[in-house]
Image 1 (cartoon, rainbow, N blue to C red):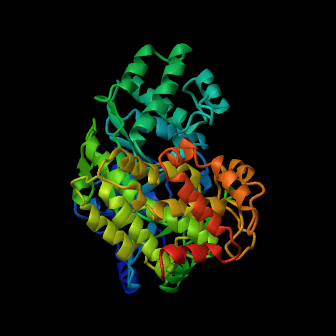
Image 2 (image 1 turned 45 degrees about the vertical axis):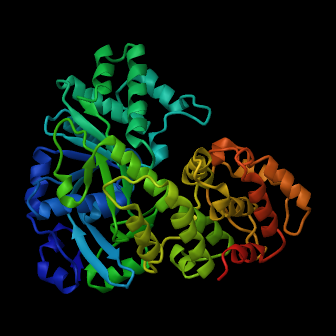
Image 3 (image 1 turned 135 degrees about the horizontal axis):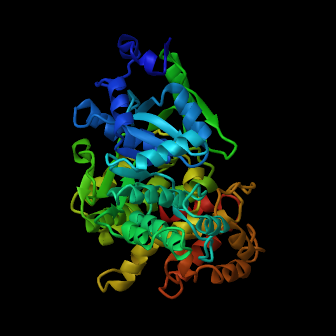
Length: 538
């Protein structure tokens, strides 16, 4: 057995015998270079970071295009970073799974250190790094809620109010922490740098900037920092917040992959589930296709990411790629499969693609209903991207992604993933709303899903969603085989909600169609599959 750590990595022959590609650079030298003059910090050392972003830096290191690694920072849940990852000297085993079952296995050493901000010495080290001229970038993969500083009513959270009242020393909210670190950089001579969100939501850079600047303004109003600090974080020629769009499926760690690594003779491939329910491991299982499109707005230099396949471009192109992916070519298909997969008790997204009706459903949503309004970003052909999704990515049986994971927060996704397409149909004189079948059928399936009853008539555990209590209240009294009038009345109270759907579905002429589909799905056990098969015959 060879150990998953720096010492074990020295036994190149053992790793190669086990079928793993190892770093093609001097790992210890890179670690020393990074400690002396760090250039890249990252908050959110989860699967997408280690399975994708670390792979970019690994490629640059392998090719001699950089001599520095990345340092991860944990504002919370530092145990995973310092122990699960730290115990392996921050090495990550990456296993990319092809649809034909072949595996690409590699060990990454591009993540060189981890800083747990709950530890005084790590907090001090982070402050020290922010005062260094060498620092070019702080990147993020913290999910959209990690950027939030307000509650659902738009008011500052109690924690953020405390952080603004207390000033830049040791705030608790992540965005306030970032603002505090930037204040150290401001005090060190108004040094330039870039804050790059790499999270999967629209206009991520704008939201990041708004949160950081809001905290800075609060401190300035309370006379806790100089007014010039607000000018510093607001000036994108000094501190920039580029937009980006990322795309790679990196599901939670698969125990079968962990066992495969161990059976290959690698010791120390550990996984845990934290008290917060986070699945973490020092290995990542992921699909092969990956896309990262970033606005090329960096104020203190950057790694040559384009040499690792990143599209460095302008803001409009980032926005267009994001619209192509999120509104037509990937995310709508995922959401449709998620709600139907939960109702029909499919174990994985890939198994759903073996069902001819479900395959036909998402193929129509992408190629027939979405493609007429697709935004062509110019850097990736939309039809090629969609065909890769339909033919390679979604059907990949070795990618352990589940409908339940994708179904999380569906109420927050419908307005973008389907609402934008509906708006384009309404605005166009050349497009006919009667062409939409798969989209309203998915809306109906979501209403049916929100009942918490599977197609077999059994209790269905719903994925986390902030709208679940409201939806179940609106659907109270709706039952399988129950009164059709009650079901239609419930629809009347839901389908006109522009926040959820992006449009008033009745106002645009789709509400009654969704109602009809919903009523069909309520006929009794098996009615969801029967309705699906009716409109998309197997």
